[in-house]
Length: 278
Image (cartoon, rainbow, N blue to C red):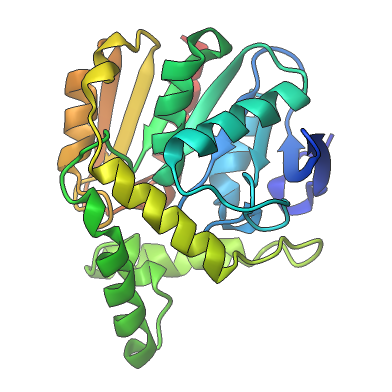
């Protein structure tokens, strides 16, 4: 199997009549780590340093959920439906136990999978994410629109504003992260459609009006990670996740935003590997 995310082949699997695309790397065997991604993201938006780092010790699988990127079907407008599709994808690959790594929207989905199918999940990493009903989550559409409005005049990518702080360190990290995303030049994924983005925003806003009471029943070990200045899913939500989850540990990176795990990728990968191996 491929040893780097840059050259991992894009594969597909039939999930109840719908094509889901995915990439996998690392040594097969043991409990695989399934990656669930953020609003607007496709396979090419995963930081290769994070994926490659996890793959040094684990079988890692990144995929596009229903309607996203190269996967078929229509994107659901609820996190709960996205979770059902994620479970179906995992089942289509034949796995009976997985670790989940959910970033942002993917973290919402991971929480629901753990609640709906607790026996499927061993451990969970939740990064840049928050509980249902979390502070500021309903504002994601406005935050996204503001970043796109600022990006054009500044000749920057919206992720400069969405994922990273505006300090010199934060912006240098943004440049480095965006550079890493360009390392893969062939077999690229399909960009998300506007319909997908609108469905994802609707799902996130509904999540932001939800209820997190059921988190107290999630017994899985959980690593919660974020930057100390997340403007997309405000950092307070990471503390709230760690408070509500019975078996959680919390890691907050300094001078970092929503993409703190990408800015501090070396430290995060080491933390994640330690957590998964415990």
